[in-house]
Amino acid sequence: MQLSEAKILIIDDDVDVLSAAKLLLKRHAKAVDIEKNPQKLPFLVTNGDYNLILLDMNFTRDVNSGREGFHWLDRILDINPAAKVIMITAYGDIEMAIRAIKSGAIDFVLKPWENDKLLETIAVALESGKDKPAVAQEEKSKEDPKKVKASGDTIVATSEIMRQLLGTSERVAGTDANVLILGENGTGKTQLAKHIHQHSKRADKPFVVVDLGALSESLFESELFGHVKGAFTDAKEDRAGRFEEAKGGTIFLDEIGNLTLALQAKLLTVIQERRVTRVGSNKPIALDVRLVCATNMNIEKMVAEKTFRQDLLYRINTIELDLPPLRERPEDISALADYYLKQYSKKYNRPVNDISSALIKKMQQYNWPGNIRELQHAVERAVILSQEKTLQPDDLFLKSSAGQPTTATGFDLEDMEKTMIVKAMKRFNGNITDAARELGLSRAALYRRMEKYGL
Image (cartoon, rainbow, N blue to C red):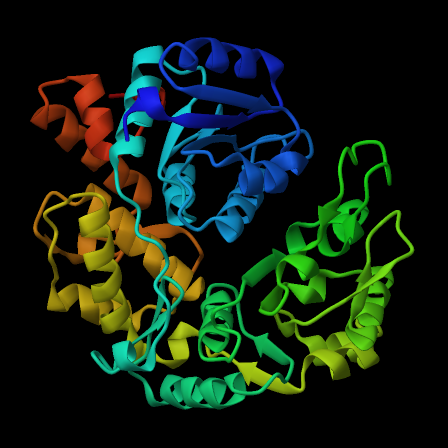
């Protein structure tokens, strides 16, 4: 699609940024809408038919971590998985850029931006295709027994322990039993929940994800149960909650162990009565949803310590699935690394196409405290930064037993970063712009690192 034909939405809490962006883009795009309040995003995305969304990463609740931006990115993609979203922030670096793209954004820009660069980024985003999430089918999974498709994600499982778990989850999926998934951070709890949904009779209905750990107590009821116009100061229109959005499908409540006892009581009432009442209304709405929950906490210990309600636990864990950490299934590491290598070499158009046996051996000896998420990030970063076609041990940044970042050969991360900068500067004859692009950094970030290392 051409920029001149595009309808664009910009969400930012800074009115000056909104005004500047609209002033620039309205001369090039068909239509440009701006909005300061991200709470209006669900309504706008549902009804606005936008070709592209520019989304700020930091709003008033959360100054510079990008957490709110990722939350609203998830909401946008829940409503429209094919949406094209460009994240904007004043606090960007390669880590946040990678995470934004990993979470589903199509690109990432820093503010204050260069007008020509912003227009170029938007034009490229509009012209690029974006695959819609794949629907899991038994026939597709038979093509490669190591990979099970789950709504755009892939569960790579070659180990016996994972095969048994997936078999159990598929048998459970055929029922409407509530499921509780236990596991450490990064083990793939969300992917397993999607897998259950895609093997259920509700597979053609919505799969709605709610990160309870990211919800403040004041937003809990409005977010999950919805509200009516006038219920509170910013309630400008009626809005369905996440339970209603999941009608006929599955709602996945992640990090349920983070809820306070007061919020647990409210959730328990909804689960027991199978109905919700929007904030500001007295009219209950019947629910038809499958409930899947997850936590990385020791929920039984929390019950014993009276920080988690036992009656709520009984309601949510009709079936309990314990997702093993990556260190307990090293057989999966090679297949996972190969999967992410292919995914990111294609995504970033990099010539990297293989992993050395020495690196695979090192990866299998590593403890992976961050589990699959850490492996995914490590391979992604290696693909971006590697200068060779085959990944070697010194391409992969891991953590030492002391928790300090190192490469798989034990070299210090700072030494490796300094070496990479020196190589890039030599390769591009001191051209900062080209070297920064090769390293995946902004010019400012590269200048900071060069100053840090005295280059």
